[in-house]
Image 1 (tube, protein in one colour):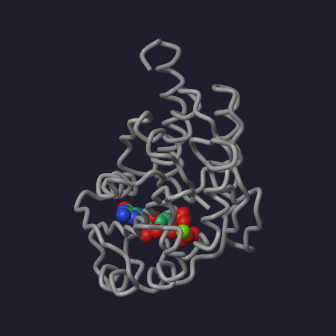
Image 2: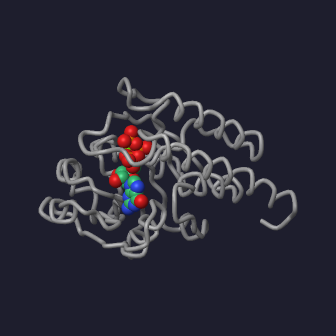
Length: 236
Ligand SMILES: Nc1nc2c(ncn2[C@@H]2O[C@H](COP(=O)(O)OP(=O)(O)OP(=O)(O)O)[C@@H](O)[C@H]2O)c(=O)[nH]1
Ligand SMILES: [Mg+2]
């Protein structure tokens, strides 16, 4: 399907021993060359379960979702395309081909797997998450004219596009940073529907908790507003 191009899959994880094995095993290894599970100091068996399922485990001592993604990118040298997804079973690895497809067929630089375009299991997205997504996507459309329907974790990007974005956010601003920078820099962006399931085990660290939702929401909206302010000041 991808004409010999190399695909790396990056999965940031924190204490996902109950789910990471099944997630890793569901990846089509004919399509994905490297599966990199980036572990942020899990205190459970995440690393050994992932390794046993065939993933390469990267230990990243700096906490945070973005730190883990950056570490995965650094480890994935040689990949032409990178796919990101969560390790809790919410995203379905069998949908990786759909997420990569617009890169091949449309020359897309970045593809967002949209959980609002796809079928979300009841309870998989909280009302706060849906409202926050909507508000953030609306602001991005007003500010930069690019229409996104989700800020979900499941996405694919070419290595060339990733290099142009110079990603830095170490935390939950990671997904919005990628989307805002793609809009600012005129990358060709596509969205495809993806399914979204309730996590398949373990405990929520972000949207399933009040503090996690608050921290992520503040970081995401703060990123959008600061980025627009920098644009207006001509410093972006
Ligand atoms: N490496 C790393 N991974 C993290 C961190 N926090 C969360 N994760 C991972 O990021 C993904 C998303 O976290 P979740 O807890 O599932 O957040 P969520 O999807 O908003 O909430 P759920 O409703 O529980 O699915 C999972 O794969 C987590 O293991 C972190 O600080 N470091
Ligand atoms: Mg999740």
